[in-house]
Structure formats: structure tokens, C-alpha cells
Length: 539
Image (cartoon, rainbow, N blue to C red; front, side, top):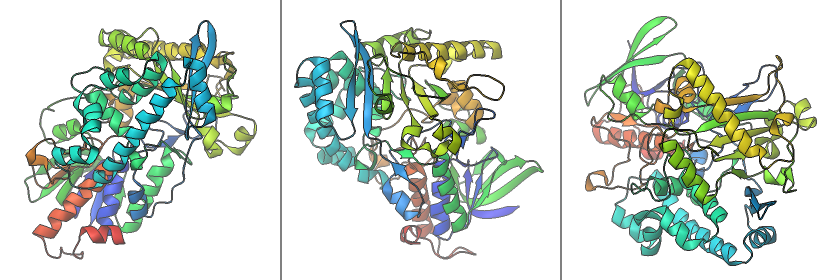
């Protein structure tokens, strides 16, 4: 039986971050990944036979990945800014129009607000609202890579007004108090419901937590495009972990985890049969519900994802009824049926057990910012990719037999594309490329597909509801938000407090929790040199 200082279950991006930090600090680390490739949901793949287009098949943009992690691990990444934050098409008074928001709002944004709403009031409110959120992001972002701070300390850091507006009461109250226009309200609310099945006035405040995570990344909240696709992010992390000395195994499915507080055993299978490794620590890059099962326990809660992902390959960008330039409209986030009332209506329908009549979603075009994911000849011919992330599509709507699942998947995909077509001067179907077998290049992934492909229980992209990024009880204060009921077992994936999205934060914090304990409990482990946090970041 092989023996390591740390065994990491799962090979997603967080697991690779943890492995890289720990190996750089001198610990022996093994990563065990069930699939034949690393990266989990942060991968680039060619989903359309015969077409050389490497799409970010699951996760697709980067915001929460701290620049500090990129620097610490010497990652070779190119994360590009988009010139447009969002474009939202709408029909007003029978005329097609839209709301343009530039990444750095200027005269074009101001005029777009004025034309849509009839005055400058909404734009002024927008500037003030997001100016306040910039202060919140600057205050919170540095704390994400530290032990959890007490809630009272964070409240003082944010200020009483910001705490009241964004933490203490439902997001819907603040949105309605601040904005009058339904479309503007909806554009704001979308950041509170992406990947989270909730509504503006949910008393649990899960919409508030989701909203904060989407707006605090790196102190700016900017969502950037990874050149080469999401696979470039995982590839850079895998390189960093290997170069530091970590052992990365694919095709190794973990079947059991045993921990007793001081030692651990991880059982796994591969093409050669059954194996096991001993370790001092185990880090779980899988979801907490999956870890419970590996420990022989019944999961306390099984999460439910609520999104439909559509990947499209186009021979050209479709024209818009509003006359907006497609290269501008699709360059940022393109909102579909995401007005404030539309979001609530869609939530109510989905909560009632049926696919929303006009399901809300948002689209972006990777290739307008980074054409390298296409073969040169496709890029030269003007081909593009579109990614649609559909909201309010809970896993329960797709349950049943395999035939039922396929039928509901097809119906959902058609409904989202119909919502897009309502704003196009030409149907999206006319712009779709075909694969080598003549099939349209459109791929749909329900939460059940996500679970089957990358192992996220219920297809929940965050492994469960997001938590506030600070300590909510005195017991949590000073911890890293990754601890479990056993001292030598940590959560390093998206299910960790302050996990979620492609951030690496869960991996960073789990590694530092291990290094902190290692310094306290050991001198110089056999075969390594003394590990400490400064070692991890200095090498």
C-alpha cells in the first residue's frame, strides 16, 4: 500500500490548487480522479463530431479566481476582459430595443438607459448601486483567502448601510427600492439566481449570498474570458501541481474513505483492479454529499441543480431585431427573458413542477473575445460559439425514464432557443453549423447530465447552497471553512464555505488548513522538510 502525506479525492480545479500548494510546501500528495482527465467541470472539449471547436463545456467564465493564487502558483493564464458587461433585448411599446451596459460605463450606456427608461434616473441609480457594491467587493475579497472572520467584524468592515442592504434583508427589497424599471430590476437580480433556484424575496437569503459571490471576485467582480477555454485554467493548475511533485492519477475512482483523526485510508479502483493508499490527511474535492457516501454515511442533504446549459457552434452571429451590432450585443452577457416579473413568473412555474413558459437565460460568445478555441479556418470563415446558461430549470423537471429525460431535455432546449429567436431577425437554427453526420451543432446539458458526467450530486454547480463568506457562529471563527467532524479530513471543493464557481478558494483554504495543523503537530515528516504556509507561497 502506498503512503502519502495527503490524499485528494477528485481532480477538479480546487483539488489541483490544493495539491499544488501542498506539494510546493514539501508534502507528498496524490490526487485521485475518476474520469480520464483532470479539471472536473472546468474543461474544454470538442462536443461536435468533425468540428474543431474546443468549447468550455460546463463552467465557462472566471471571476472569483484570486490573482494571488495565480501569482502564488506561477500559473500561465491569459484572462481577458470583455468590452461589454451586458446587453438585454426587449420589446417596448411594440418596438424592439435593448439595454446596453459597457464594462466601463460611458456615454453609450447612459444613452441606452435614457432611451429605454425615458430619463437619467435609472442610470444614476445604477451607478450609485454598483459603486456601493465596489466598496463591498474591495472589503470582502481579501478575506476569502484568510481564516473566517466574525460576522460582527465583517459588518464593521462593510458598514452598517451596506450590511443592511445586501446582507440583512432580501435582495428584492433593495432592488425594488433602488430601481423603478422592470427590465433594469431583472438585470440586477440575475446575479442572485445564477446556479441557485430562488427568488427575489426568499427569506432564506440564498439569493443575497449568490449575488455577493457573483460581484466580489478580485475586488472588482469582473467576469473574464480564459484564453483557450476553461481547460486552459485546469491545464495550468495541473502543470503547477505536477511540477511541484504531486502525483496525479486519472481513471482512479475512489470507493471509500476512512479517517480516524490521525490517519486515513482511501480505497479506489482503476483498470488494474482495487487499490488503497494511506495518508495523514484527506482532502475532498468532491461534493459533501458524495463524501458522506464514501464514508458510508447517508448524506445529510442532497443538492439540486437548476440550470440548463446549451453549447452552440455557429457559422455566423445572428442579427437582432433591435438593429444592435451582434459583435457588441453578444460580447458580454446577453439576457433573455430576464425582466424582474419574468424571473418571478419562471420561478413560480418551475417550483410548481413545470418548465417555465418563457424560461430565462443568458448567453455569451467566447469567440468574440478569444477565437483561439476554434481551428484557424473556422475563425477565418466567421464561425462563433454561443453558450447559453438557462435559469430556473431544476433537476426535478427532468426526472423519469431515459426517454422522459431526453424528451424534457429537448423541450427545454427548444423553449430557451425560442426565447432567443423572439429577439432575432433570423432564427438561430439558420446559423447553426452541422457536425460530420449532418446534425445541428447544439448540445444541451440538464442537471442530471451534469451529475452523470462530472459527478456533481443533483447537477448542482456549487455542490450546494452558497454560504456567507464569514463565520456565522463563534465555533467557526478562525477556521478556514473547510473543516469536517474529523480533524484530518477537509473539504477542498466547491462545497467548502467560500467555495463555488471556478475560484480555487476552496483548494487554497484547505491546503492552508492542513499546513497550519501540520506545523502544530509535526516536526519534519519523513521524506519531506518542514512545511509551513510561507513555504507554500514562496516557492
